[in-house]
Length: 94
Image (tube, rainbow, N blue to C red):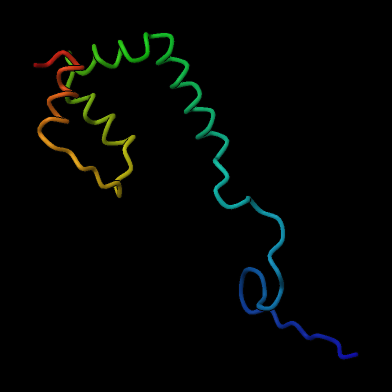
């Protein structure tokens, strides 16, 4: 049986050595998870959907900024005039 010679080149794991340990793919950062939980708790305590409707009327810039951060940038939305009218009427902006 031949002995395997491993020559380390620079930093990191040498070629041919399998990856071990580390965070699993898709695992959420603990701080991110905790902050999301706190934000959702605060939103719930402030009134949830009713609070968001109020903010959309009182401060539309902040509301649109929030929506822009929540909706994925790569999502393709098929929005027609009727769909927009329905959303605006639900928000009380006819």
